[in-house]
Length: 260
Image (tube, rainbow, N blue to C red; front, side):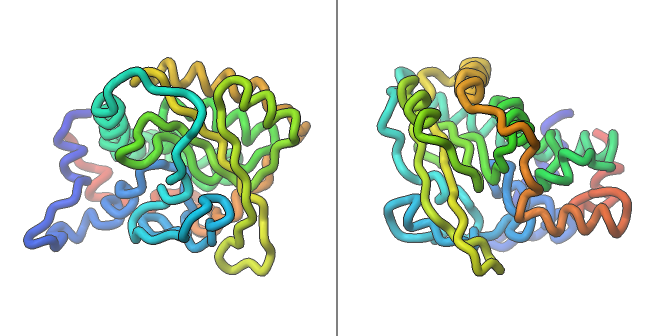
């Protein structure tokens, strides 16, 4: 799929205002860099408190959940110029709309696993996709994943409502991986839940190298013997399926039917 498809989804503005209302729903989704995100907040701010996890003030940006992973990874060291990581990160972000559109055109009926995760697997960034699927199959419910925010694009991360035992945390730290945990309260919940971040600093701007590191990480995380419980943010994704028998994420048919 050429650049014309991506350009259709991208944000257009005049004096800072969007001038393509028909594609606004897709544009809103594209502003979320990582692609495992709460459907209640697609394109919006996180509604959970993260001070314990971040060690600083809570969410502040209206179109990013990247503040879930705003701390600097202490372990590891990148050997490549940061610009190369930023270029690679942007390339993956720009391909998101094409991946999602192709999936919906091919098959807009999600699998049970996708319904539980609240997303199509094609929405996952390619370097972290296998790791996210592996963790969910092992019983760890993920909530966000992939490249860290600009400018720390060399950091890879998977977050979610799960815990890791002390031995697993030690094993991960031994290979240069940081594990951070804190209690957060999801929107609409009266219960505090433990939220964990697994992150590392990639040594080279290579999707294959990042994928190999994630495989090393997930191999150290024990299988709980059952799949993860459904993502607690999955209400809208699953409701659309229950209502229509498919999930199109508010992308209009005229967009899906375009050819380039």
